[in-house]
Amino acid sequence: MQDNSFDVIVIGGGHAGTEAALAAARSGASTLLVTQSIETLGQMSCNPAIGGIGKGHLVREVDALGGLMAIAADKAGIQFRTLNGSKGPAVRATRAQADRMLYKWVVREALENQPNLTLFQNEVEDLIVEGTRVAGVVTKIGLRFMARAVVLTTGTFLGGRIHVGLANHPGGRAGDAPSLPLALRLRELMPRTGRLKTGTPPRLDGRTIDWAQLTPQPGDTPVPVFSFMGSAADHPRQIDCYITHTNERTHSIIREGFDRSPMFTGVIEGVGPRYCPSVEDKVNRFADKLSHQIFLEPEGLNTREIYPNGISTSLPYDIQERFVRSIRGLENVRITRPGYAIEYDYFDPRDLRRSLETKAVDGLFFAGQINGTTGYEEAAAQGLLAGINASRFARELESWTPLRHEAYIGVLVDDLITRGTNEPYRMFTSRAEHRLLLREDNADLRLTPVGRDLGLVDDARWASFTAKREAIEAERARLTALWLKPQQLAAPEVVEVFGPAPVSNGASALELLRRPEADYATLHRLGLADDGIDPLAAEQVEIEVKYAGYITRQQTEIDRARRYEDAVLPKDFDYAAVSGLSNEVRQKLIQHRPETVAQAGRISGVTPAAVSLLLIQLKKTG
Ligand code: FAD
Image (tube, rainbow, N blue to C red):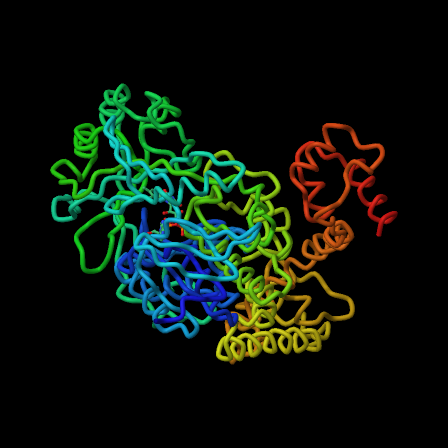
């Protein structure tokens, strides 16, 4: 009989579960990934794309910590773009259109080759809980697997119900069964459960689209790369997407379906993603808008199926068919799969610690869609963190979570556990108050060293990272030391860039780079650059120099707030003993049980005065 005991068990092989399993195994825990189907490991339930604004930042952070998502996107990406390319570096973001099948294969290959990781296909129906602590799982065929820590990442499957018009049936995602017994068990275990909803568009047969009528949208050149360890050579063949639009006729057909819409007739109770609304929601809410843009995105290199991004819907099928055919280029289109909405259980993330361990059951961690988020990237980021912390819990090590100024992962977790969410939460750059520090381009500088300490970063990544970091330091030092005398600054090619304004005592090349007229390419033209430098190291030097003022200001604010982040509130902190707190604030603090004074200060209604009282009490007792 095989040994069925592990350090960590991960339930679910979606985007959270695969990163969780890889992180736990990489950091040294013997890990089991149990999922409903090995065929659907890494499956993209909705659009075949990774990244975008805020989301791309998460992907780069997962990558900097040794995770898989960026590498998989590089190997499966069939179109890459840098969004906000003309804006400041803080909001620039990478997006990759992926070949859905290829993506799944890359994920599966990585899992199958990961030492310390065992895969098993079966549905988990129950959790084994001993006292207040999780001890294992029970599967549909009655197998018991034991572990010190369990990570639950079951996505949209718990109590899942699929809606197309007024017809609905249980399902975890189109073609997959829901997870029902486990949902019942978790409703018992977790204090606060709710229902959320998300939707997907119908898929189209590309052979029935009149491409000649449509505007192609090519990817960027040079082709962006997602992973710090990747290169454009990893990418498969690149192809175009196409753009079309809804029109007034489309909108009037959609309105005809309102009385059979599960959303508008109250059949669906769960709240949907505000920032990714269904097409009927858009037509209803923005009635004065006569047209909405649709991107026609290929689902892969070896399929004719097309994903029409922008028309997710749960309207009845006859309406879906009529409205898509009212769109330019789609007059004769055939639908291959109907659009649908799905409702599912989620758990109030305020019932989690910042390690993503539940407060209700020791050793039980939650990650992904079940925490009220939406998106592969948000799921992957949480999965990685939960995997790290489950592994550390099993090995009796302290948990690790980045703070808000260290990573978008920190912002995501802090937002969820402090404020909770009553609609599917997605990442935006505007959620990060220190976004100038949290750029895609410096995710490795922020996180790879800690990833190395956590045992997540292998030797190859570490060697590549340290070489880049040394190149940045050397170039900064070289440019600082490279001094241009006044007569050199008066040379015609320099005046052409910077104007004739005299610089009294000369200037260093670094100071010239700081000027708004210059970038690193200017230094190249003036013969001041290091021709052999890694372009990514040069980019870092340029960004750090240009934004130095803002970055220093943000750093000062962070340093000032540090004592609040460092002030840990013990699990059994006695709020009743803090004199001067209002009853309302006291109740909120007792309910939330924040882990630090900084987190307490971010709970709505907790005033700066209350924060000071907590600090005083901590000093008294500690
Ligand atoms: P999932 O990717 O759903 O993975 C869950 C995994 O757990 C699956 O492999 C499943 O088989 C497994 N599992 C479930 N129960 C059990 C069990 N009891 N035992 C063993 N294994 C189990 N995101 C967006 O950003 N934008 C969108 O527009 C969008 N639309 C969506 C539309 C639909 C219809 C769906 C289904 C999802 C949509 N999403 C969208 C969400 C996106 O798919 C998820 O955010 C992402 O997949 C969440 O990852 P996850 O790992 O949490 O869960």
